[in-house]
Amino acid sequence: MSSHELFNPKSFASRPVKPKRRKPGKREVDSTITYRKDADGWRLYTVGACGVLPAGSRLLKGQPYPIDRFVFNTEEEAMESAQALAKYHKTKFKKL
Image (tube, rainbow, N blue to C red):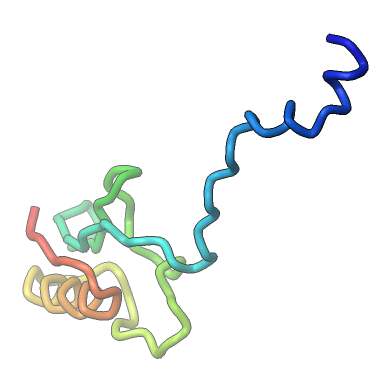
């Protein structure tokens, strides 16, 4: 490449365009809240792109949390809490 080609403004015209960046905090949530029986009781889980993960305090979004625990003694308590957590996150509830 000659020095004329290096400093020619037209040689920069073929450079690829940078992709637009997403705005922070504007990602779409595609997860589901569920529950299932574990050794210590009925536990809440999130099901998403990363797999099935136990629900925990990392899901707190700054508003008052609708539940106070993630492990329950009965299936009915777990189902009600999973539905409340799904509503809090504006996502779906699905029984596994």
